[in-house]
Length: 246
Ligand code: BV8
Ligand code: ZN
Image (cartoon, rainbow, N blue to C red; front, side, top):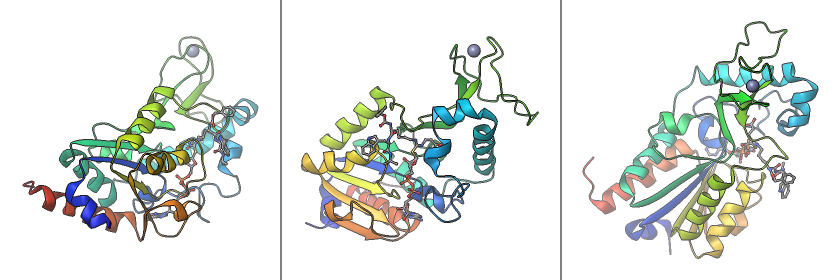
């Protein structure tokens, strides 16, 4: 059974996205050569130990990424997923991205498996402070109520994902009849376990990537190409099948 046939009768879609969907917006991916700070492996900076050892360096990296996000916009891939949410009865979006672009594209419900870089809070009292004072680059941002260190609200390597969010994504993967894995190298767990959970529950699984990945062999179909070109075609096909007026 091909994807086009599935799209005619699908009532429940679950989508998992990775950095690849934001590449066409100009957000560097993690593993691409011009990737983020490619002299560091993400695991080296995106962990609590590194933060405690050198909070200034880790904040430099997050402020560098926050700055990029102020200059980019959602692309046709993000927008196609927001359209799918409108059209499909049971639609779930789970993302590994912390870039807030799915929300900016109009998705109302986004399961942020790894948090959101535009948010931050105190590691001691938990007070939220999304605009910590990073003006003095020699100082690390401190909590206005207890003086504790402020950290980005993202999930670092070795840290648990927000369990309610991950469990909801897993339930959606096991409930859907179509699972789309978009722009992810599928190397980071437990997010990378979701496609297999969908497959084992009988969903039709499709990978969308500019190249094959570690998991390509598991998918029913791998569509090689740019997410910003393939996803609008899928959204159009869903719209056509539902005869939904734009
Ligand atoms: C945890 C937030 C419990 C921070 C991130 C099982 C096996 C092995 C290892 C583990 C395991 N279980 C746990 C681990 C350890 C670890 C892990 O998975 N390590 C990996 C490296 C092997 N996992 C964890 O630590 C997780 N926590 O397990 O807690 C626990 C607790 C204590 C002790 C033990 C267990 C937490 C993981 C979350 C880490 N945080 N991000 C931040 O962003 O700063 S992960 C981060 O990296 C991203 O969120 C994302 O998940 C990952 C990057 O992957 P992608 O998004 O896929 O991006 P990438 O660049 O790799 O690939 C882009 C793809 O797009 C490519 O394939 C490319 O071809 C494609 N592409 C490019 N352009 C396009 C495109 N596709 C389509 N169109 C285009 N235009
Ligand atoms: Zn505090």
